[in-house]
Image (cartoon, rainbow, N blue to C red; front, side, top):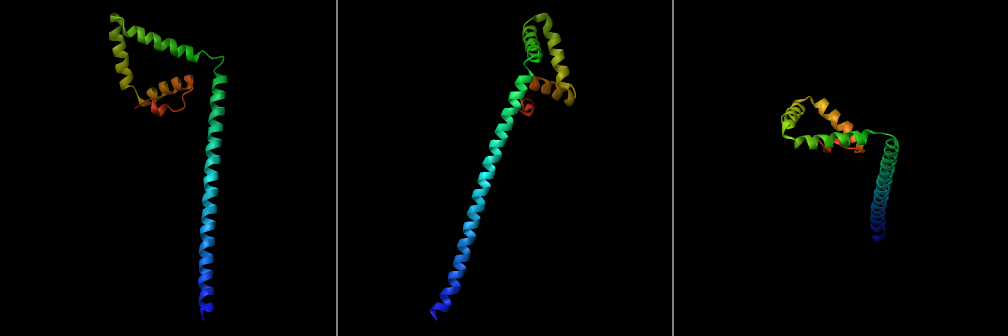
Length: 121
C-alpha cells in the first residue's frame, strides 16, 4: 500500500526537481547571454572611439571649436563686446531646438562625445 502512494509522490517530486534544474539552467544561459552582449557592446564602443579618434587625426574641427570657445571667453571679459555677447546668447536661447541640437551635435562629434542628450538640459 505504501509503495503505491510513494511512487506517484516520488514522480511528482522528481518532476518538480527537474523543472527547478531546467529553470536554473535557463537562468544561467540568460546570464551568460547578458554578459556576452555587454562584452560585445564594450568592444563596439571601443571600436567606435578608435575610429573616431583616427578620423580626427587630420581634422581641424577640434582646434576650430577650441579657438571659438577661447574667443567667446575672452570676449566676455571685454566690456565693449559684452552687449554683443549677451545679444548672441539671448538669440541662441530662443533659437529653434534643431539649431541648438545641431550646434551641440557638431561640438560633440568634434570632441568624440557620444551622448549629447546629457549636454543640453
